[in-house]
Amino acid sequence: MKKQKRLMAVLVTMILLLCMGCGSSQGAESSGEETGTEETANASVSETSENTESGEEAIKIGVSAWTGWYPWIIAEEKGFFEENGVNAEVVYFPVYSDQFQAYASGNLDLVSISLCDMVPPVSNGVDVVGFLVNDNSFGGDCIVATNGIQSVEELKGKTVAVEIGCLSHYLALNALENAGLTEADVNFTNMTMADASTALISGQIDAAAICEPYVSLAEKEGDVTKVFSTKETPGLIPDLTATSSEFLASHKGDIVNITKAWYETLAYMENNREECIGIMADAAGTSEEEFEKMLDGIKLFSLEDNAAAFEAGEDFTHLNYTLQKNAEFLNDQDVVSDISMIDDSLLDASIITELSK
Image (cartoon, rainbow, N blue to C red; front, side, top):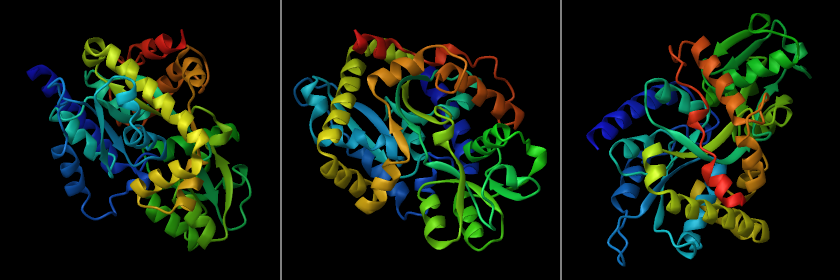
C-alpha cells in the first residue's frame, strides 16, 4: 500500500506539471476561472460514504469537467450502479488536475484521463491502465482562423496559437501534416486557449488550435472560419476511464458492473436526451443550449466502438497507435524523456471483451 501511494504521488506530480502548462481539451472547459473549485473538490471527497449494507467503502470514480465524462453523473443520479449490483459513487472535480490530488491520497479508485495524459506518469513507472474509452473528440477541437484564411494550406507563414507540448499543439501538427506542411511552415505562439480565443477575435493572431467552449465564443464574437477539426482525424484525442492494474485485478467484477452501468446510461441518454442534457448542463454550470453544442463535438463510444478501438491497428482509430504517437510527440517536445515503457500493456481490453460475449 505504501508503494502504491508513493507511485500515485509521482502520478500527481507529473500530471499536475502537464496540466498546469496545458489547457488541453480536458482542461479547456475548466480553465480554473471558476471560483471555489478547490473547496468544491475537497468537499466532494469529504462527502463520500460507505455502503451501509456491507460496510465496504464505495468505489470512487473521479470525474472532471469534460463533456464525455458527464454521463457518469447521470449513472449515479439514476441508480444504474445499484441496478448492476455495485457500490460506486462519482466524485466530481470542476478542474481536471484536482482529481489527481484525491487519487494520490487514496480517495479515488477510478480516474478520468485522456490517453495522451497517461504517458508522463507511465514513463516514470506509475501503474495506470485504461479499460474504457468514454469518448473521442469529434469536432470539439478545431483550428480556427481569421483574416480571410479558409484552409490549413493558407496558414503557411502565418501566426498560429497553440499550447506548446499539449494537445492543441498535437492537433495543429497533425493538421499541418495532413495539408503537406510542417511546423517550420508556420509561426507557433504559445497561448492558453482562453487567451488564444481572445487574440483570435481581436485579429492579433491568424489562427488558433482551441476547443469548446472557446470555438463557439470565437464564432460568436469574431469573423472566423474553422479550417480543421477532429472530425477529420477520428481517434486523435480519446478520453478514457482508467485505474491501476492492481485494482483492476482485485475488483474486476465490480468494474465490469460499473462499465455495464455506463452503457445503460448511454442508452438512457439516447431515449431521454432533453432530461439528460439538463442534468449534465446543471453539473457543468452552463446552459442546456451550450452543453448540447459541446456534446455535438464528441463521439460517445459504444461497446462496439470500444472493441474496435482496443484492437491493434495502424491508424488513430486504434488506441495502441494513438498511444505511441502521443508518446513520440511528448518525447519530441521534451515533456517526457523516456518512452520505452509505453506499450500495449497500458490498455486493458478485458472488461470490453467480457461485456462483448
